Amino acid sequence: MDEIKQGLSEIECDVLVIGGGTAGPMAAYKAKRRNPKARVVLLEKANVKRSGAIAMGMDGLNNAVVPGFATPEQYTKEITIANDGICDQAPVYKYASRCFDVIQELDSFGIKFQKTENGDFDVKKVHHLGSYVLPMPNGETVKKALYRQLRREKVLISNRYMATRLLTAKDGRIAGVIAVNTRSAEFLVLRAKTVILCTGAAGRLGLPQSGYLWGTYENATNSGDGYAMAYHAGAGLANIECYQINPLIKDYNGPACAYVAGPFGAYTANSEGNRFIECDYWSGQMMQEFYNELQSGKGPVFLKLNHLHSDTVGQIEAVLHKVERPSRGRFHENRGTNYREKMIEMHISEIGLCSGHSASGVFVDEFARTTVTGLYSAGDMASVPHNYMLGAFTNGAVAGEHAVDFAAEVDLPDYNRDDVVREQERVLAPTRRDDGIPPNQLEYKARRLVNDYLQPPKVTAKMQIGQARLAEVRDDLDNAMMVRDSHELMRALEVSSILDCADMAAYASLFRTESRWGLYHNRVDYPEKNDEDWFCHSILSKRDGRMTAEKRAVEPYLVPIDESERDAYDRQRIRQHA
Image (cartoon, rainbow, N blue to C red):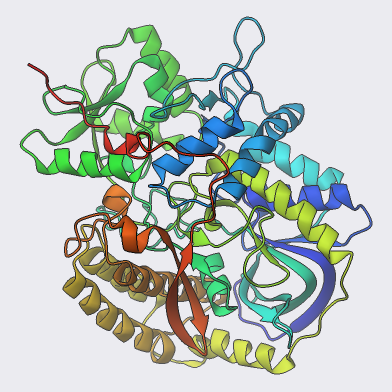
């Protein structure tokens, strides 16, 4: 099945969506709904039926702006403060203004959200300031419901094709993508008037403490392919130094889920059973307090549920052990842990790049446009901070609608055929070696180096050494990696993306000479926040074949932030009073 074959085909479309997880299907669906005559293609390296971070479902919406509980202005203010002020508010406000309509549309798809006895949405408070969490009792149906809509709208789906490089026209406009079949290694050129990147987070960047390549917090199939493609096409990437780091269950590649358990009365506690942070909303400063507690004499850190009534714990288990990661219940059973009897040990995840949980992504505006004409991005790989699953749905919808309108106004651009030939040579080079290093060994080495040298707290000398060591891995990738079949070829291409993301993480971290976003960019050599010089985005891009970075001013706020509110997220630690 995985025999490497020769072949090159070409198709044309108006809108090409890359990534079949959350944002991608919604973008394709909305594009087709807006213009039924448009040729919309959804490209996915696995199968859209069960791909992406929501493959097994999701336990709730982390950022639902529901009338009566919050306003778009309140949410925009919260996210701006949570992200240390480095936030272009226009895309956040656009999300906040549209997401309730998307919730209602998802509800019409058959994806049900928890409601009160009065029939109102049952919104919970987890965030530091506002209430935005909306549970999903049947969250395991999300992907199935979404796939039904794609079939209903007759969106063209190409499964088992992995995009490797974006194509650009002479004028710099996007022109399509080159893809390789993950079962046969045959090539496909997809010419397009517009392209929407929705390939998710760079979730396989750091190495989990377990050492398992696939034991990641994020969906392990999300290997940063979109970040790499955007970079090589010349798009700007924002704040890559703002890592994703999350709390997780010790030795289990899943979140602690204080989001789910918190509204029932659970909380994060130290080894003495005491709460040490006021809220469990994921932010860089929360993770810094988590890290500090781990390093103190009061570590480790735990999820505390054993003070709750058994029936309440049962309600929590019904969600945590059924949706998103069904293996969670089996993990605890095999380990002999019971939420009712003792606290559950937590730890810190490996690093990744993800705007869904932090702020590092391809730079986009409020219409999901990148800095390359005709190229859009949405979901965990776009730069809208803290946008989670509902953000992927909503911003995917924005991208799909704007992209299909843009496609109606332009002609299909041409591309340089030599670019395809060069990409074929790059992709197939490992298949032409009889001996060498297999992709899994190179991946393990690259990700171990990420842990050794790029993991926060960040030290300048360590990151510089990391760059040199990663360059050695790059040389092995270019000259010594070998693959035996098309499945290994896909893994080799993912290693290339992982290495690109590691290079970007190191470069961006060295560029921003301050500490910001709590643990996400805790730079030991520059321990203080420096608003005078660094109240800005850092934009990383590829120019003349080289990695560069520059500052970009934060756009004027649409929603003012009072001076007394700016450091609200810095005041999360619970302090003892006499």
